[in-house]
Length: 244
Image 1: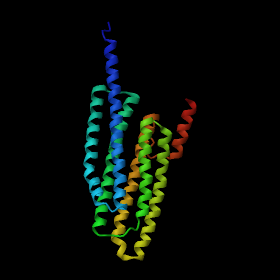
Image 2 (image 1 turned 180 degrees about the horizontal axis):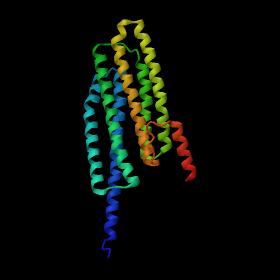
Image 3 (image 1 turned 135 degrees about the horizontal axis):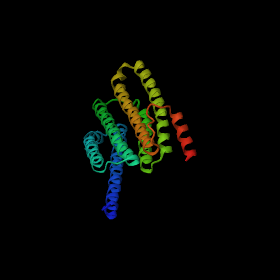
Image 4 (image 1 turned 90 degrees about the vertical axis):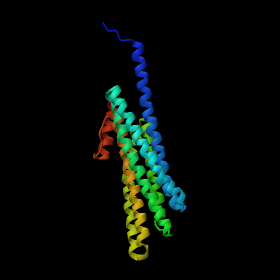
């Protein structure tokens, strides 16, 4: 005889749903923080603001703390609820996403440290335009990847993955330009190298944003699209959508 109280099941189910929603909310909170970190790091360069750059470095600790907190939440959900299917994919996607967000925070901190070094040396503004443009692009990618997570939007996530190729192209173009400038003026080598490190950090942020988008595709479609051709992924998603 089944003595399970249906009201208890409903209560447990409601609690589980609340826990999953809390995971999403905390992930988005962390995402908002790291996006602001990247924006502030870039702004500190453009405005020669040492106080803002130092704040970015200091706030990296908050990003790390959020990652630890969310990972602990995910562990508790896995232990207590033993989720299956879509719910399990959500917990796994959140765990993976926090790792990439933490790394975005690290890259923003690296940019801020380079800003502090540049300002201390009273260096010029060569390369600032490239930093600003690529920063705007990767911030948009981070924002769109988080929005795709919020709305379980695989199409938007796919768009973010595609944009990573554009960022890579912009990065290569900027590096070629800066290399040429360094060869023309030996005095510019030190500051230009700092700018190059910033651009490298921004390019990596684009990679991490692309990873976030891939987790959304995994969450929504159940497809692990890492290391796959993006056009093949898009076609597969399109075919599945038509069959549904």
